[in-house]
Image 1: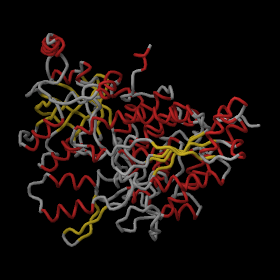
Image 2 (image 1 turned 90 degrees about the horizontal axis):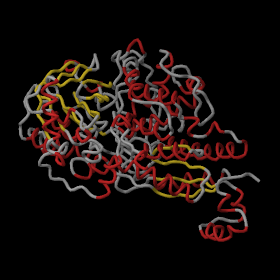
Image 3 (image 1 turned 120 degrees about the vertical axis):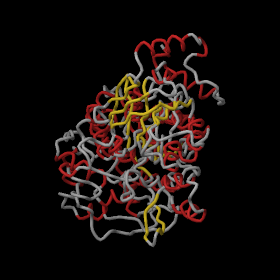
Length: 615
């Protein structure tokens, strides 16, 4: 008999009580010889990207059962960053990633589950599930709920595409017409699914493809399209297939730690840089590396950022293309194909299907594939009907976007820029590095020298921006918002978006030890490490200091003499118990957040918990 993990609870005379309980869940005698597969769902009525996942879970369970497995579903939590943003709720977003990983470990190991299929979509949920997959290391397949369709409005007698960021930006524009704003609000998020630009959710779901744990199309195939149901069914069959391959054939190649290795992380980061994805993905890939004990760090990311070209432009970096358009251009495999032809990809890495990247390109890259079914899948597009129902439409484009000169995806020779869409900067302000999403930076601001305006919290910075305290040429400094200092490392979408509202985004910079949403653009530098609460130099910045940012040279510098910095450090340490803490910040910190802060590592380590404190 096959030795499944679940046999610990389903076999042996002393397991009669456990079997009795399994029977009470609906299992029958024949089920005890089959693998038990956890259906890890993140359905939530709080999140539009997850509102439809309950029905997806039912389809997955039916397919697992018909394929010879025993599906058992449970839920994880899911926080919507967009709803939690702009108030104290954002403190809980990043810490929720650890809770998600823990909850999966608890459920899977407590019940000795054999494998799992993770149904995710947004924000910290996909990363949390990926961390759990690397931690537990049992056969795992990912399937997302898919991106939402882009919103559309009529402006100047022309239909234009919009997304969530447009609604946020215009919400604080004093000159915007109320009826226009209402139209934006009602149109920006028209369907179920993760927000339509290359924000964190869609970035991470795209990266599960190149990491090797999901099927092609997972990151770009619309939530509303019928083709996603087929993807769901195929993924459900795949998890049963690889589970049996592992337990019956002892094939370890299907395990997450043998799929997501250093080369796979290299490929994932290369794709993220090439498509100007969310800078949050860096936090998450570093966290995944920690869980898998993989030697992949900020230096690796920095080296990649200097050589990977920026070849794919998607909202919020442009209004011309959204994720639905990236899908039409060949999706993730379209980007991978171009990087492969430029020798930027490790092509021998094997994925959960059992194919190498080179094999995947031959089959799924629309520029060379001869498979008409695959080409048809990539022609799936938006219907333009408001709905929260998945698989509710079957619209297809008449043609694919194969324009590699000026299309959504470009060839290496026609890249938007030779440098990628994400860069790591170093200097006295960020000894351990910081992150800037270069794909969203105006070309004129790639080199910037400005005067610092310091705020001890995101809330204070927002008040300052809207209160017209910021002038052209300023560098807004938001500190004590890192993993420990926040705690929770808040996203800074509102400050950066309000800079747009005030028409200052092309004339100012913003730096922080917090992080940014995938929707952020402009000269926004985050993840400054070490953070202020960990005695980083950012804690010593004063109003009026000069800060120099040079993206091409990867430099960020506080132009203050070493002597002055040493004096400021001495003065700060003299505050004793009040040193390296925000001044006059009124913020209620729960015990749960205090526990997270106590264990949180810096952003350059992925903001994971420092388990060395347990020793």
